[in-house]
View 1 (cartoon, helix red, strand yellow):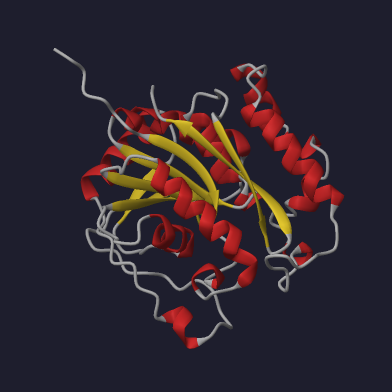
View 2: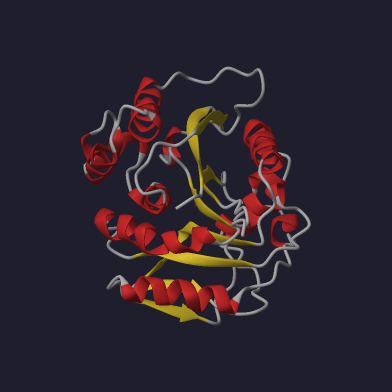
Length: 277
């Protein structure tokens, strides 16, 4: 008997500045084009699991409502930012399976049947899967932002890759809010930031260099604060932690494709791992 082909994938991507990617903000044009290109090059999954930088729980939380609402977790934007719709269904069965995998790994976790999807879910998926026709679940970060715990979350979720899913780490590899240039767009110069570039290059070397062993990969991520300009790029690491979950799920193997895009005048790197286990 032939084993069915499974087209799972692990993705670490940026979700941009609040709702701006869907409001025509020029500084997000490259990101929007990249996310659409990335989705087009991958087989369509049967479900999506999103680890978003915008939800932190005392324990890991997993959405389990069958029809989650949207959480407009931003403020100060035009009215249309609060009219965005993304009516994707939830997936209670997948949520409880994810909870069970993390419980088995000794991770404190619970299903959450009241919270909806935040913009770390519906902004990128509006670009990648605009029909909203696939069920999704969202997995939170854990307060305290412990690196090893989030790597372990990814390792625990690895068995999901035997199914046809996308495991999507929705964050931002540069997230210093004072460092963005909101006026930057296609063809417009922005002030150089060599610290931004040096950290992105370190991430690429760490996550995508075939000469980096899984053990070295894990060790470097655990000690990410020692990287060049680490705290310049991440004064707080919540937007980097979805990458940690992805890396754990990938078994610390090298990413096979890297995208490097400018968002609001700053470089941001994105990684793709085929999801075989």
